[in-house]
Length: 101
Image 1 (spheres, helix red, strand yellow):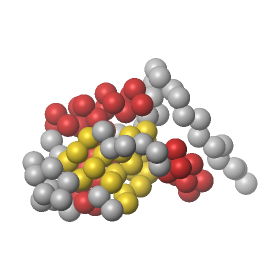
Image 2 (spheres, rainbow, N blue to C red; image 1 turned 90 degrees about the vertical axis):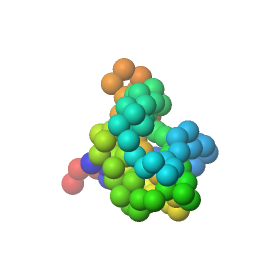
Image 3 (spheres, rainbow, N blue to C red; image 1 turned 60 degrees about the horizontal axis):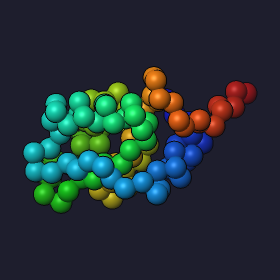
């Protein structure tokens, strides 16, 4: 689980990213999840755009993407989903440390 501080950091990192996947009329499917897993392994932080013609609820789509890929849902703003998953072999993003009290 990400802390609020880590999510803020990731939102700032994702700000300049452009969505590289789109969820349209077909909704979320296994092929999309598989491709997203590969991209998350390479990039760690991605944006996914939910198109206006998507028939599923945006919250359901965002949760399905996060659950299917094993990623953290960083943000759902409008129709844009931000996902983060730490890479096993290609680590680029260093998260702020968690303060233990």
